Length: 443
Image (cartoon, rainbow, N blue to C red; front, top):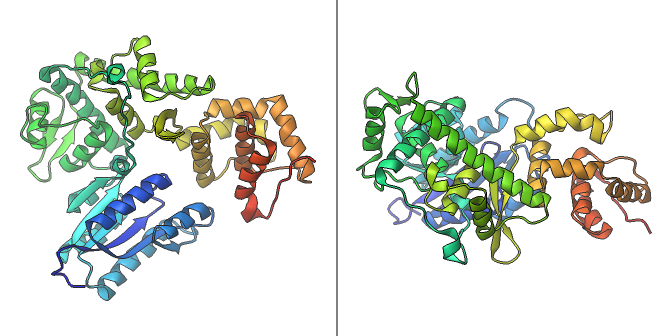
């Protein structure tokens, strides 16, 4: 392989603890990387002790899975940086480095890559990405873009487009620009012009400066400044965006209406789960209309864009369901799961049980989602006497007195969803195998 070849020779370095989604996203991202060029090497770094399934999935996708025991802060970051430095020496045929991370700790190594005249493709969640990483990248991609499911209504008339004037849309997007700036600042990052742009696009799938009548992103932010939505400081390309000291009543109202629209969406999809009928796009569209929600009032021309924007905000999740159908499910943030455990762990799991570690909180969140459940529903199942009897009978038959919170939660959700004892035991045993524990159904 030589640098004169038409396709770039790519090496991939993945900070898995900083950027990870579901397996479908990982698969589609990997496929997209391979379509761009020839992959020389691909590495994924993390403490894989309790990520066995994730490690297996990435290995099967062609990654060298590098285990870094989590015994000190940023251990995986240091190991990844060392690998990149070594790789530059031993694999000079690499013409493009893909860094799957948004961690600003990698800005020096990213700068070294650019200093050598090599391509730098950064993939991350823009909402928590350091501005130095996006500024250095020759190409930047939002990791959420790899998990987009086509959201089409079978009956187009049931998901009609809602049109507003360009003037109205400009002002709505001015308020959304303020939200993007807040998001960057709250993540502890610098609201540089480029960084805010990526966050704006991630939070608002249908945003287009050209559709609003502007020639560029810079023109849009210039208009936003003239209208009092933002203040721009410093010359290009180092321009920083900040919020004005006071916001107009109109701006505050738009922000309030947008927040309320997302709250309505979350409430509806949670109620759907509680009633045993997860919403498809057409049925969700009808329900939101019945609730009097007009998404065009908060800047969305169609329901798919509104749902995807809610997904980026970690409010809902779009998931395959059955054949070609997809459903919209509620999505709990890990901090909400942690708060719930801190409040309920001893009451629901036993006096000697502690709040699970962050990795297991995330696993519990994903398990709830994958089984079409909600946190309140899990709490209900854990207190349901009939489910409790079935669960205790399984433990007694297995000569076991207790399961850790993750496996206990999984068992209760599966039983609560109507899974048989055999089906429940099979799925829980897959999670218990590293512990050397095996469940059995009552004979």
